[in-house]
Image 1 (cartoon, rainbow, N blue to C red):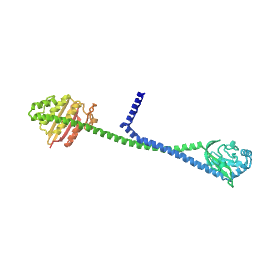
Image 2: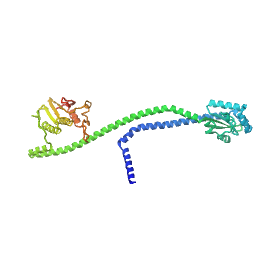
Image 3: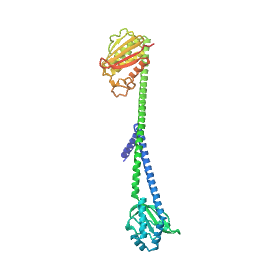
Image 4: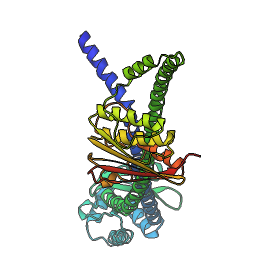
Length: 438
């Protein structure tokens, strides 16, 4: 029993957790407009149908009441009832079933009113509750089977009863003589199935409007859902970019602390004249892999050191670095950042040979970095330098798509441009142009 209770509690907790997920809440928010429209249209349809049914019933009741009241005031009805009340019940029944002129003319009037008023029956009955008229001949001369309260109380009766012709909405009104005494009643009824048919007809007339409202509402709710979905996606993109920026910031902060520590160690060794120990320390933290290449003789210390570091880093990844260009080029920190990121990106993409070329023309620097790697698909050329974009397929929890974005922003800050294409080596080619540092 304890295991069962624990299992139930775990399932309940899982359901609560599922409902609290952002994906579930978002799905509900996207579905909410459609659900609101659907429920609103259904509720409106039910209310409208109820109003229509009530209106039809009230108008029919008023019409039937008018027919019965009008008949109760006719002199011919008064005369027939006074004759019927003067005779014994057996005689009245006999006269109602044969072609008695007085009752026959009353039946003709009742039949005419039935047809003209579209009612199921018109019944005139005397004080003994014997029918003088009825649409079915066999019912004439028979006693009324339903409520005859108007004969006893002199009040109008409105209700639904089941008689010889079936369930009907009926009105029964008393007939008074000149002295105000009740001498009979007039009953007029409409078949409930006729009312049901009118209900269905009214609903059929209402249905196209409800369908139209549903279609328009669903279209509007779909537009709202699309707008919400776009907002969610923008929020997700912003959250991912913010998270990436946060992780980059943390990573750079950690690297900066580590780098500062190592720089201080090297500076201390050099300040005390321990050059050999400083070189040993540098070799320990950044082992040199590979030798210098052609075209590097005469380079200033900063680019020469940068190329040595890149050659070592690329060599660790199985790539060779080939450097050519103008030895007198004015290379500063921004230029080395651009070269380092482009070379590193080529090696990480799987290149085995990375070739760089840099020349200076007046106050403009022009450089090329190309490789023999897999290259960049045409569909990705316009996106490859965007923040967060990467062609790497690893699933490690690392920040991707930052280096090329940094290259783009660095080149742009120096009034330059960056061009992406395919190299003659078979891989990617990046050409950049930027202003020489002032």
